[in-house]
Every structure is written in C-alpha cells, then in structure tokens.
Length: 459
Image (cartoon, rainbow, N blue to C red):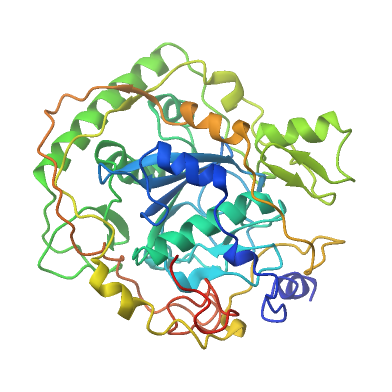
C-alpha cells in the first residue's frame, strides 16, 4: 500500500500546467553559446548520461552536420548502483539506449518538468526487465530516475522542444554506468555487469568515432549498432543477416583494439578493481555534495551555479568507496577523433514539418505517465518557476568531459552533406500494460498540451 502511494504521488494528470514552464524560452546566454558553437537552436540533440561521474551531456548538431558537445550538466541525484535496471521497484536508474519521442515529454510533472526515458525499451523487454515511467526530471530527488535541478531540466526540456520544432522526430538518450574509457573498463573488470557494459561500449564507440547518432536495433536479445539488413530485426529472434558501413566497422575496430591494449596495460600497472556494491544509494555530483557540506547539510534551499538544491534533498551514502572518479581520473584516457563517414542526418526535410505538427492540439494531459520517484515533503505543485541556470560554472565544465583527443588509425573519409531520412527507431515488442500508462497519438502531447491553438508555433 505504501509503495502504491509513493507511485500515486508521482501521477501528473491532476496537475494542470498553467505555469507555461514547458514553454520557457532559451536564455540569451544559451542563444549566444549556440551561435559561438555554430549551432542553431532547432538542430537535433542527443543526451549522454554517466552514473559514476553524475554527469549529463547535451550534444547538438553543428554546421559540420555532426554532434558537438554543447553543455555538461552535473546530475543532482540518481538512485541505485552501477548496473542496469532489472525489475519494477529495484530503485535502479536504467542503462542503455532510449529513443525519446515528443509524447514522452511531460510538462505536467510534479518534479517541475520531465522526460520519460521510455524504459523498458525493446532490449529490456526481450531480457525480461520490468518497470515503467523512469524519468529525467527536476527537483533533485528521485527513486529510479535521473534528477536534475529545476533550472537544469528547464534548459534541457527547452532544447529538446526546439529540436522537435526543427523537425527532429526523436532523440537518443544513452545512459552509461561511467565513461567507457580503458581506465574505467580496467577499474570495473570484476563487475558482474561487465559483459553488458561491453555491449554498451560498442554503441559508445560508434558515437565516439562518427559523432552521429548510432542506429540502434535489437535482435537475439542484444543490441546491434548501425546495422543494415533487408530482413527484420526482432528483439527475441535470431538476428537476420546484416552488415555495417565499412568505414564505421574499421574505425570502431581500431578504437576497440587500442582500448583493449590500454586496458590491459592499466591492469598490469596495478589499477585496482572497484568492489561491486549491492543496494547502493546512488550518486550526486560533487558540485552539489560540496554545496550541501558547506551549508551544514540539507534543511534549507541552497543555490548553486547549476541550480537550486531544495531543502528536502539529502546526499547519498558514499556508494563508491574504492577509487571513485575523484581519485583515479588522474590517469588520462584519450579520445578518438571522429572519422568522416557517410551517415544519415537526424533531421527530416522541412517539407515534412507541417504534417509533423498536424495533430499538435487537442492533447489530453491525463495521458502523461506517472514518475517513479518519491514525492518530497513540502514540494508544492504550484511552486514558482525556476530561472534556467546561465552561469560560467556549468558551461566551463564541458572542456573536461570528453576524453582528450588523439587521431585514429583510419584515414578521414569524405563528408556527406546530404540530408537523409530520420533515424529508425529500434523495433519493439508490444509494451506491457504498465509500461507508461495510457498513450496518445498526439505527437507533441508532452511539449504543449495546455497552450491554445496557434500558441505553439515555431518562432
């Protein structure tokens, strides 16, 4: 009964969104940063999440038609431990590749704003994993979700909204246990999740060498990336015959070979293995733990450069006592310079945008999914809107997030400037009845269900 009450406290259909926070415009500072980085506000986005580092990266397509890092957001709170979400109620934040469509955008959240990851995806269902309504949301407090500050989620949500306005049909969230570097693979070599993480690293490597959103499919209960086949990918059936672009195959192979050599060298040098935990209390970025410590703990709202920590938020117990990122990242792991490959762009042609927004209005707020997070005491659904963080501290951290650059063994290939069809979503089996609640055919129910007709037009 108590568990049901906790979930019921996250239902959003009883909270009419009259604040308009889902329509918060991008700040002047963000617009200036986009201009500096040669990005348009409506170009496609991609999100990468790293648990151990408690960081969320927001990538955006620039004029090169490849993804470039726009912003690194420190994560205020995530729950569980390193490893995938297995079942409903395990308090785990998921790991894997998730496709976010406009109907997964929730403007009516009790946690300011929310983006549903779509867990379980086709891979999760094929492997018997269960759960629903796992979010990236605000309010800094969560059970099974990735919680940001209200200011952060406002900016993330707005950038996603503008990308949908620009014609992006869906964007990818890549959730990892940590940055998939040789150092971290060496540190976590004894984890029972290592085999699964090696599969995630394949997708990570595809993005690293191409700076394109990898096409994700699932067959025979495992992920495949950038696969081309005339057959159909079924999550539980044997994989059809498929091939990958040779340029990508070569670049990924070279990167993986170098990484394996470096991982072995690090192990031989005595890099200690991290002890696997069971029932961990999740994580919080050091920016926020330091702020809490300097203010004597929780109990009052604390403003930081990355947003406000509400009074009800508590830091996690130290779940990574051995060799955390703060103590071992002095061992630098290099990054691969992306190769030039012929991969389709994420954005559809502008001629399809009119039909894309054809069913925009008449949405039903009750169709928004509940969120698997504990309702914080003292949190009012009608709390004043937060202003998006516009500080140097958040932006300046981007320079340290990708690994240090080096060149690949592969020769650069010719760049393709053609606009292709939008990326295909991975095939999925029918979701279970509890996988996110009732759905709607409205493409942008999560972007603006409460604005009158004509009020959500592209600026």
